[in-house]
Picture: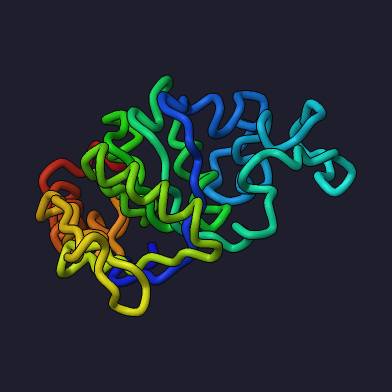
Length: 217
């Protein structure tokens, strides 16, 4: 998993509350347990006018010009600004996979659904919870500032305008659990954490094989 230390990137605003995981990645695309390949169908029912199916060539489909991710000014955005309770609904990890595969590295909202929030950390994305008023201020800034970029410093746990300019006088601090912060900074997903104990795992396997050889015959 790619470590997350700092990020300076374009912001894309998704001005909707209670965005559920079926909207993030519709159920018909959940045909794989690989983490890649879902980005083209992120927000599929909002991004395209026509109905999509797995494996369909998206170049043949009709994009919805009104949907924010299809607007040229937000091309290449890596920070998703959205409203409360983002990621509600089912527990599908595919929602986090789709966002990551699309290129999103950080999300900012007043709140996230618990399971989705945890899935972000497992896939190298940073979900940042900020007060409603601060989030609204960021929406206002994005609306009146084409190409608005934010700088996120995970180690310092703060957000500010790219280039070092503070937002509303100061860099905005955010909270994060220490263990989740450590894992993001070091790029450690669940597999990487397990592999850190590889020597102990091998020692246990060898000891058990010697103690109970009949289990391995």
